Image (tube, rainbow, N blue to C red; front, side):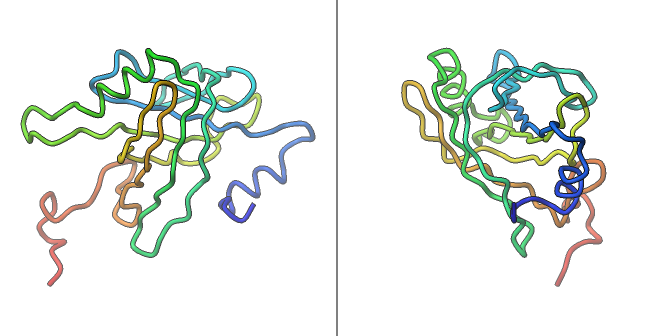
Length: 171
């Protein structure tokens, strides 16, 4: 469990016997007909995402919690399996979706949370990624989930960038 944060380890080691944690992944994009809340756990469960209670649907995917690099990046490979044509069609539409103002591709937003059975609150601060380098076939989707610049992440969210805060310009 070398990939787990100290907070996660403390939580898991102190959890009552028989309690386990479950990963919850939320995919959002303007081209989607709805947000997708997925878990690779054996059963559906409810958890809070953005202050709202949602149902995480059972859907096979593979990932590994990333390590944070010295430059603040946290990238991981994400594979979503046996998705079915409707899900694949949504991902394909998102992969071609251009922002009307900038003309650039809009990445799929991915949020990872971790839930202890019986608790609807995530046991970690949400980890947010942007899904890029998509590879799609008739039933599967793979991509690189590129982490936000965690060293410059604002609280509760946002980024401290020189264009928003000119005083941050470093020379």
